[in-house]
Image (cartoon, rainbow, N blue to C red; front, side, top):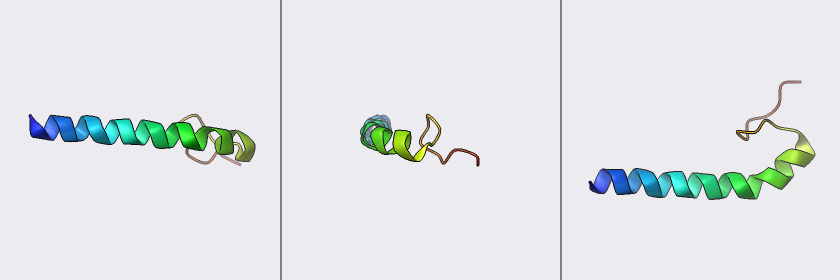
Length: 39
């Protein structure tokens, strides 16, 4: 149970980080998941 909560919390943090990275990604041109786009 505790483990599940931990995972959910990590997912939430990851999603928030992703949202923060979105505008920068749009400028740099990386994929939706935040990884660098293939050149």
